[in-house]
Image (cartoon, rainbow, N blue to C red; front, side, top):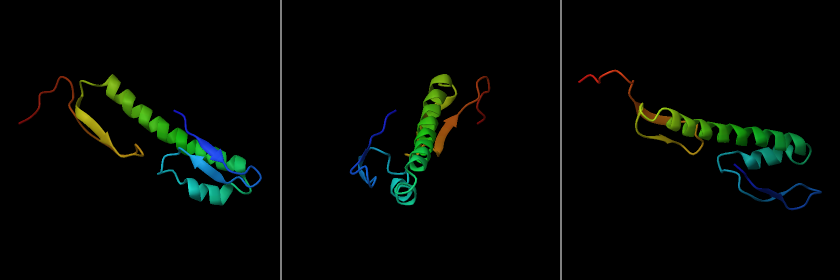
Length: 96
């Protein structure tokens, strides 16, 4: 996955445009870290993005590796930290 982050003025490190998902607290991180600690800002932003991409990748991998156990399509929120799905255990007959 790739995300874009453009700065308006490198002397002040102001964010001009970005493609960071809206649930990542970019504005708060920029206010807190960007003026004095740009490396810290990028490190924390990287952690947020890496966690999001990892969760989304785990969901896809789960769907690919266990398609026989999942009933229907799993649903998740945009952050991919809340997952909802129905499953069945192979070899067990459902109770009525």
